[in-house]
Length: 420
Image 1: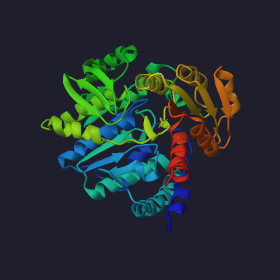
Image 2 (image 1 turned 90 degrees about the vertical axis):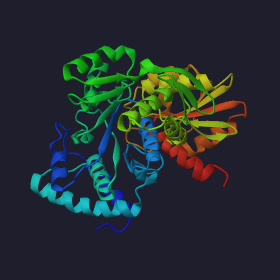
Image 3 (image 1 turned 60 degrees about the horizontal axis):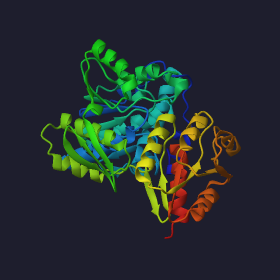
Image 4 (image 1 turned 90 degrees about the horizontal axis):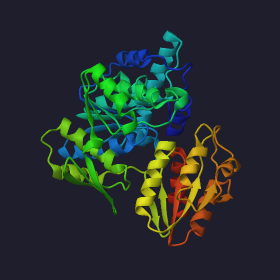
């Protein structure tokens, strides 16, 4: 039995899968053995980028209708509890301990019977499903971990599929072409169901082929998004109606439009006033998040080429004639050479740093891929302090490279740097 949350995390984070997942048999057996029932509507979200933002918009809209909305996302930025929510309430440490005590005993029994380990992600997903069942939710918004077809979350019978976009990421798992990656993401769109997507035009033909072969009602929301304007929010039109979203970035118009369409499918009678209220009250830390205004410091968890391209376009849209400084770090399995090439379009100076991770990249490696001014500061707290102190009022400081990295930076800023 676990007596404190540190013991829980020590066990949970160390549950590693013994082999690459080839099917969904294990998670299916676990759900059956635990007696888990999913007697609620389920919205399932896959995509290279934008899954969390889209999920957050949907939750924010639908909870305004008086429904209890379960929310499962990964990874987290603020704390582990962020992964599992009902409406705006994170699962508590006490609840995590309760379910992990149950899952600890179950996982030991499962190992004895099948000689197989239930890994971290699947345990976390099972925790969410147990929590949602006990709390009798009305609707679940479920984000895929990686891919879609063989993601543990794809074991569920869902009511609506959403595929935000397709870009190059997790190639070691999903493949090296956009078509291969798309085939995994499209795995959540089952025969005969409705799927919403904001996929780029370059991959649309592949989607249309899948749509035809599987009798999918595919809605391409990009056809209906227009008049995007960035102010203190993202203003746009979807199907001729005007909306405003709280998260500021050009791509947020597409994430928010996916949420608008999803909400109207789940609740056809929902009024636009509630949709707009939900969009403007959605919160998703670490995505074009301004944590300081003097100097302006923006955190964004872009961690692949597709995400960095979207980030750069958004910074260009909101940043008028300001000098931009960038704090950057990325893991060694990412295409950081191409990421830096794209960031060079807005960056005037880099601060390169590193994190404590087996896949961390030595900051000196980053300097090989840019001709811009660089400063290497290994300690991430010192790096953030130095960069903030060096950034003038008329300059902008951007922190990016990975979600884990900006999560650490966010924690340092709010707990060690920001004046209390």
